[in-house]
Image 1: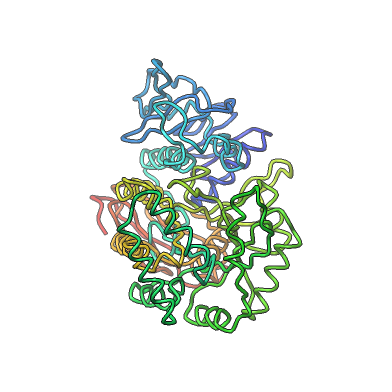
Image 2: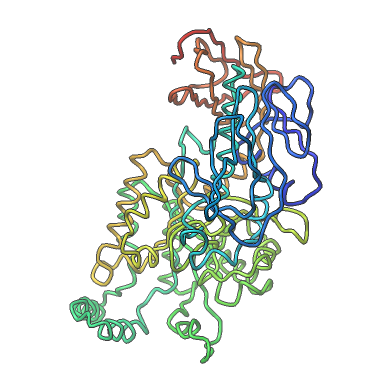
Length: 547
């Protein structure tokens, strides 16, 4: 065994963090010390030819400081141990006037002075939910603008990669996304209403209160269009044409609002304007049109369904009857979420994924990750069965941000470096250019930008299918210095594999796989379908790295 994870802990958050890391990066490893070249040690004594030692620690209820690495400032929820002065400092911990190295490296060991696994376990169970809004912490950095869990895990992965290179061995992982794509974009639209109703009054009043009389004219144009038979919020034909031009497919979350208006609860005042019926001939035709062209139809849970098992199940079954196909996912209206109860209701309803976790009023990463994940359920001591696809950018929050494009670029760079997922929520109504000038253009600009950066652009159902399939796959491998033999399972399924090579290895032959992409010392392959006795073999020679 070339790589081993040697851990000794009964802490459920730590065990979840270890499992999450290994499945996320698709690393084959074992919890055994024999013959390991690179050992990740947690709760055990250091061992292995190259050791990565991780400190077990206590997690706090608030941000204690920041970890600095390169240009990143990562909030942390513990007081890390000083990693010592013998090695080369890789990362520093800062809190007030205190600054000391929390990760150091020498020729045989990397010492990590904070508890990566427990941090991730706590973050992905919602333990820090109360801290996300408003911005808190040192220098008022919003923790939501940084994918904290992703960056913690990236630090550990980079340490493993460094150890493998020092030992002259390849690191073989399951690729994060198909076809060699290094990050993904998920396109979603919430269908809150199909007709403009109360907005005829509320929008002009808001504009007049703000003194924005120039924007009253588009309201007049929309009203004239309404009188001539053009519904201003029925933007689906324009949206379909736009996504056709981009070669994109998206997920539409359809709402069936049944909640009562509560005078003392302002968020319920809009309910009457959102009571459209899926069985309405125009809506039903639209649902089938979207599904036929390859878009996904999903459920937008009504206002009270987030805390009602029977209601969310009823809505799912009713939408399935209209579509005549299974509904796989849900997003709760208003991003209503009771943690973990809402996800337990979704489990009971037989839903495969949820995409509610995100911000209504800001951009970023609500639980510190951009990637799909199964939230940890501490009371049940298990991951939930519903896959969470977190929202990164919602249109309303995006256009409230005066520095929106620069903040998008900041989020994009973080997602790209972590091979993550950018999930967009653009309501269909904002593609009415009269009333929402530039909103559709920004949506297009973001997608085109990501496509040029070689993103996989798709919908929520495809993300869910890929992620579940990836987690149900695996591989083992052996390396004798000249031949890398990879045994993927199940072999009958095509798999995507990413291999990180030492600089001195040069590929001269590949069998039972297709080379997709190379970059520096990184190689991506697609396996052929093989039987149980076959394997992928890559033959190398030593020398200057080449492809």
